[in-house]
Every structure is written in C-alpha cells, then in structure tokens.
Image (cartoon, rainbow, N blue to C red; front, side, top):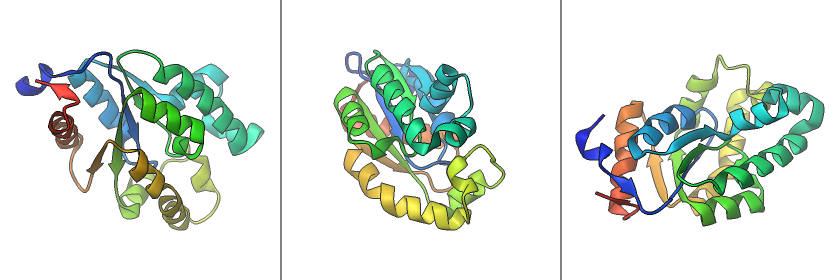
Amino acid sequence: MNAHVSNNKLHGNQNVFLIGPMGVGKTTIGKLLAKELGLQFIDTDQEVERRAGADISWIFDVEGEAGFRIRETSVLDDLTQEPKVLLATGGGSILKPENRRYLCSRGVVVFLDTTVEMQLKRTEKDKKRPLLQQGNPKEILTRLKAERDPIYQELADIRVNLGESNSRKIVNAIIRKLEQENYIKA
C-alpha cells in the first residue's frame, strides 16, 4: 500500500462507482481501490447472483436480459444508497435511465475504458458472459462499445484509460484523478 494514498479520505460518506465495458477489470481494480480508500467493495453482478440464488447465465436463460436488468436495477438502487461503498457495476448497468440517476446522484462515477482488443484478450476464455455467447465476440464487443461509450462518457466524473497498465498503476491513477478533482482530501 502506498503511504501517501492510505491517508486519503473521500469527503463525507462519498461512494465510488466503477463503470465500463465487460472485461475491463472493474472487480479487480475495485477491490484494490476500495481497500486504499477505506470503502466496502461490492460487485453488483455478484450481488444479483447472491440475491437470485443463481448465476447470471441462468438468469439470462430463464428471464432473458430484461429480467436480469430488473434485478440489476433493484440491486443498484439499494447499494448506491449505502454509505462508503465502492461498486463495480455490470457493463450494461448504465442502459436504464434510473440506474444512471442512481449512479450520478449518489457518488463519484469512474469510467474505466479500454480497447475492444483488450476486452477480447481478457474475456476470450470466460464462458460466464451471456452476451458474448450470442455470436462473434469481436463484433459484439465492437457494437456494445459504440452503443455504450457515449453513455459512459456522459456519466463519468473521472475517466481512466487502462491501456497495458497493471491494476496497481490504474488504482494510483484513479486516486490521483480523485485528488485533482477534489473528491479526496489528503
């Protein structure tokens, strides 16, 4: 842990919400960042699974994407109202207007961005992503990026492009940006 980082505190009961495409590393980065900021880490997809008692693939199979999105909205509404949480959100969570309202009004939104090529590399062996099981993954990721990037950009208080950086460097970059934007007091 970096000494200069561990003393930083978010103002008040500020929450941090990570948004971005699948495979960008929201969960991995979120766990590290939450520890640095003294926040409780929660992965919204894992919370949907916990509450449903089933994995996301099953929910998609039985209820379709619409059923999953209803569950996701309920989880987001609940969790964004908790104090001092860092949420790693699902890539499509930003599609519903009410979810966007919850995220924007209840915390700092950090957009983790990457290329389609990096997403492909990170998701190629992952069979737990229902949207990627529906055709050519590169075409699907390219289409999703085109559809969702403008929404991610609009919601983001802070944007970090991952490139080839490791998780520690990305966490440090996020913390620097939080300091620069005065979300953190040293």
